[in-house]
Length: 178
Image 1: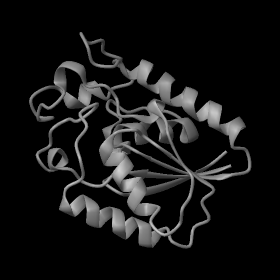
Image 2: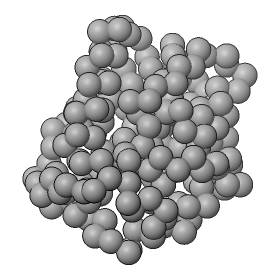
Image 3: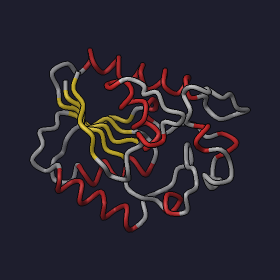
C-alpha cells in the first residue's frame, strides 16, 4: 500500500500562528489556491481512495483535490487534528509549543491531548488501514499535527527535544509505503 499525505491549505489561524486543533476553521483565499495547486500537482497520480479528517479545512482541501476525479472520500475522526484543549485558539507563542510537541517529555495537560495518546490514535488508524486497503494507493488529507506521527510511524521517532520540525507545511505532499 502507498500513502500520499497532504496537509490542508492555509487558514486565517495559520496566518496568525494560532493553534487550531479541533476548531473548525475554513481555508482562506491562499489556502484555496494552495489546494488547487496541489490538485494540479497530483493530477497524474493514481489514487484509489481519499481518507480525510472531518474538519472543514481538510474536507475543503480534499474536495478541491478531488475536483474532476470523483474518487471515493471517507471521513475519519482518527485523523482529525490533535486536541489542543486549553491552548485552542492561542498564538503558539503564548505557551511552550515546543514542549507540547516533545515526545520525550510527554507532558500531561488539563484538557489537551497528551502526545503519546495522540500517537496511539494515529498509529491505530494506520494499523487498521494497512489491512483494510492492502494494495491500494490512498490519499490522506489531514493536518500538520497528524503529519508528525505519520512520519514517525514510517521512519521511527527521532531523538529530538521537539518533533515540530517534522510537521508538513500547508498543502505539502509526503509519500509513504508499507
